[in-house]
Image 1: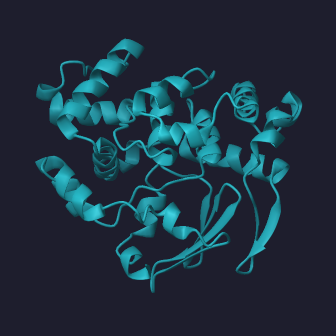
Image 2 (image 1 turned 180 degrees about the vertical axis):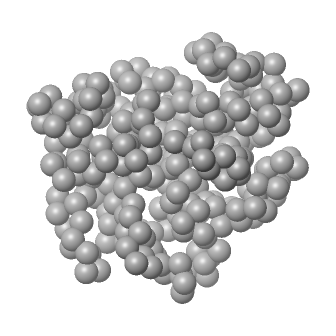
Length: 283
């Protein structure tokens, strides 16, 4: 399996807006994925996890050759793939992904990372792995029972009540990630959007990065600009104005029709391409 992974560009993948609880320490990337701890090296490539389930994290079961061939039918996506061939989608721990993107509302990547690190320090479990002492991501039960004062101390601000309610929804079974992985895209999105603090974009991020919904295509101001810049003639529901709930659904329908069942992969390569072009303006 190591040979399959060697084509992955770790830095490109980790810094593509999918995950936040990662740090580069000398030549190693050290990360937290729920209750798992992961250590990555680029050269020579090595990937180790405390759970020995690194295949799952890197989506080793995806038919990558087929997917890249499919999305590369679009010339712009093909160029983006050529520019970042080592970029990969990650299959994250669903609860960590869920809380991470709830915390992402109106925030920069650095602030999101800081909030999540604070949650780990306060509520996680310390573990040693490969010479590192790391703190796992809190369990749903722990955050569901946390006081508002404790959550606010983690610098969550207005997101504290969302994190608590979202954790309670998981603890009560209202949100069942195993069932959502099996459910269709629309059922998954509608279930997630019933949780306060989760709108279309956040639900799409959770669905794409942790629940195997490859047709999810998170639309924020950056992906909106990408669609306006390269695809305006194909999408009647894309404008410069913020995308409303109703228009988001219609726009996603157009996106899925154009990009196909692996729209999420297309989005990630386009996102990375545009981010590289606009590094000074990126938050």
